[in-house]
Length: 461
Ligand code: URP
Ligand code: ZN
Ligand code: ZN
Ligand code: ZN
Image (cartoon, rainbow, N blue to C red; front, side, top):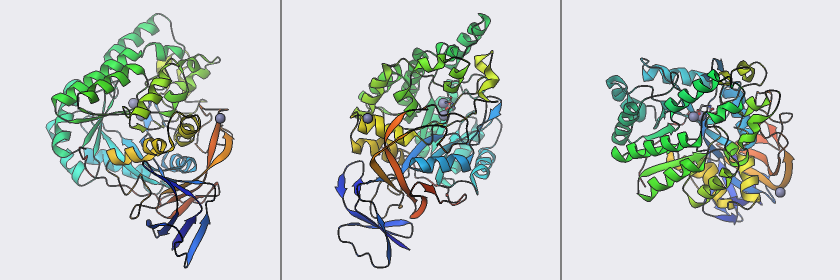
């Protein structure tokens, strides 16, 4: 089956040009003008941009956390992602100490199988770096195509690993060609500050932010970067929220260390005052790292523009306000951490980035799709529009405006952190490997059609 997209402007991380795109089966087979439409279905994209499908390198679907389980699973989460213009995600596979990595991975495969409507890969959490784990990692990287390993430096007594674990993981990742990711916050300091806050009777949501200061993120970021240099390895810092952490990444990169960073739409647009909303509504904005003072937002945009940060991930980790966020009434430490962000990542970054004049159209494609595909071993199959690439294409109308809201979103959750935000631009149609997932703003995809992406090893630039 052939499809010919006509009248659109192709936008990649490097180019913007008017051209037709011819798709055969799952692949782009030609880009040019006056292409032969013989027997092809012609799709009119007049006035629209053709973007490569968004690549979201940071999601938590169907994940147990904070004594409950995320509201979105692989079906509702990937459907919402597709509505938003995202065609590939990389989800975090959790592991427990003592568990074999194969077992942990097979549990995550089960969560996604038959449910995902878009393609997906997994990052693998490293809970401990004992000999068995370090040995099994060879299988994980070479056979499973799971080439990114996540170490948590926070969430003491839950997910947190120590520096020895991080260091051993970095050394092994260097040998195997994997990219190590860190949640960079100083969990020991946060644990102390949290216990102290509760002992002092400070229980409201705002204390989540007060007990996780930016210095704790900066310190952990700098420590992880230094350990990376010591191991001559490679590091990707997830969900960078503040200037303190940006500074550490910039310093590391100036020294030539292989350190990369991701921020998220929430840190680019929302600030810590949201945690002070009355009637416990601040709990809707509780995630880690916390929202920061507003001035940090410009630092993050500048870092994206200058290449200090490379990607924008969603950190999708949704919990309903009713019944889930409410678990933390009277004790902010019991509020499940995370927010519903997978759907609006693309829209928020386009509108507040490109439309507002903070980043260029090509930088938008780079941070929303291309760089993640490159860093995580999916390029050029994903992350660009090119002959031979998967036909993952978003037809986007830049002239439209709409309002983000729980009333119209597709995530399986009872609030939207961007409620009421006006955005410029709208996703009209989304193709995944040549097949419609969203057609004229209607979902026409199918659970189970999303495929697991075996990824290539990290390639040092
Ligand atoms: O609060 C957050 N970010 N929840 C998801 C887990 C994580 O730390 O990324
Ligand atoms: Zn995290
Ligand atoms: Zn996360
Ligand atoms: Zn505007």
